[in-house]
Image 1 (tube, chains in turn red, blue, purple):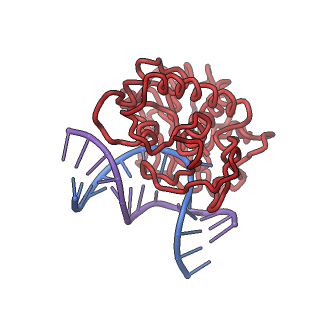
Image 2 (tube, rainbow, N blue to C red):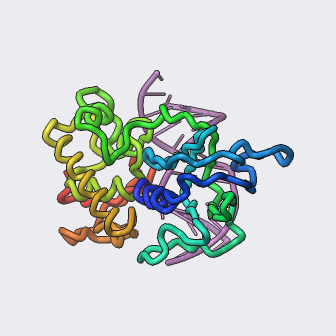
Image 3 (cartoon, chains in turn brown, blue, yellow):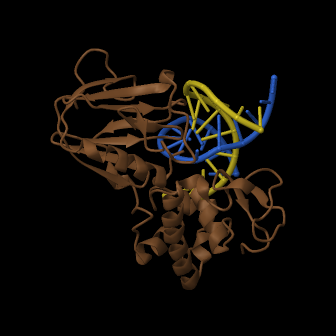
Length: 257
DNA sequence: CCGGATGTTCACCT
DNA sequence: GAGGTGAACATCCG
């Protein structure tokens, strides 16, 4: 599930916890791994919730807690998921996969559900390793992140997925945005013209806004065609299926150049 | 049974 | 140093 749109939904879900004091944290090896000793978050008061890219940041009066949902993690507040009522609701009901429970002093309950155990919880994470958030990155920083003008052969998609350069985009969002922008994700990012860079950023913002409203990363126009032999929603030709930037990539051979 | 999946990290190559 | 590849994590789905 989680690319930045889903993580933003988690942030909104958990926002009401601002002001709450954490009474008790029960977790497996994700956080406060030692069986003996207290979790350093117990007794802390939540001051705010932020997000950079796919990282959800909980500011408390003692520490910052970094919550990363990995590939299959989602959060529940008093049993309610951020996706309840939405079209695409991950199965979050299986209690076997609750990896962390945090009880507030007022009785409210925050839980992390994560079948594949790819989620991570970090105390005082190093936020400086993340690039600017994709939804707010400036044009200059965007061009910088792509390495425009350099001689690097690295494909556009690899640059867009690189969380150190731009934070928040995942495999689905990148394919969707390259499709919408009509750009081949395998092209060297460094070779994009200034006009293309500007257009790509505009498309990125619009894709994030549209899919965010619609319900997440998997609500793009390309989503249903992301199968072997899938056809372009515009041209009807068979989509290209390749590995680009280490991830399975679908693109249209005709209108993405 | 096998392959692949929305993510990250690390070892190991070129 | 820069990139790429494959494995690992644990589970589900086609």
